[in-house]
Image 1 (spheres, one colour):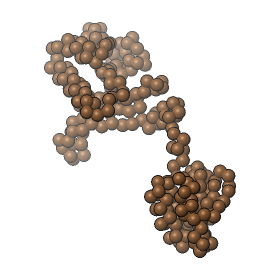
Image 2 (cartoon, helix red, strand yellow):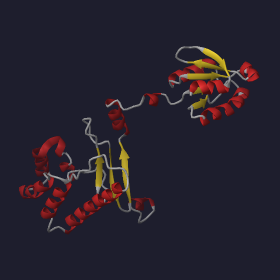
Image 3 (cartoon, one colour):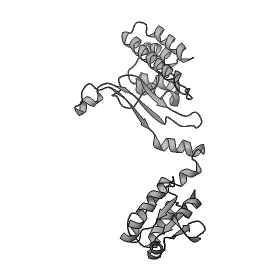
Image 4 (cartoon, one colour):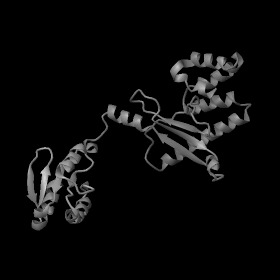
Length: 255
């Protein structure tokens, strides 16, 4: 029944009714279900309607009480924090694909892009019992990473800075250069500049290709001359320009 009702937004009431009849439900069953499936109004109005429809069902009334308790919790939480910007809507036609939920379930969606849910989950009791940890209740949530990414991309919500993770790559030619670079690496990070050291000794061409692939705008080259003089070679990956600068000068430039 829940599998069929969950398709309401895709196949409509007629499609749901047809599927339920094919699965052995009767017209009388459908008459009882329709007021539940076609709930309208505010959350409070929907709950009042449900109480009337399910007045003779102890299980149904218990479910309504749980839903009301969830709304009370949300109201209490937002009274002492930032206001809730999302719209919280009771939808009795939701169904989760997994059958271990024992209480309220929820789904998250955006109204700005035509897409299904981007997150969902629910309450479960003693799910951990199958793993040997008895009597532990909880609420689980899963995020649709691909869908969230698509929404962010369609709405152009990715900041330009998100495309540049590392700002500076420090080269690594040998053990001596690596040892010399480590305190510099930490100095840059302490200054709030996203910096990484190439993880192994490698040829310059390989390290430059790595910086290109990761869209890293600057590379610091440390060889024997740089270690001896204390002036490092800073390469601008976009222009190709190279300068010999002290660590402090590079810090000032990149800030």
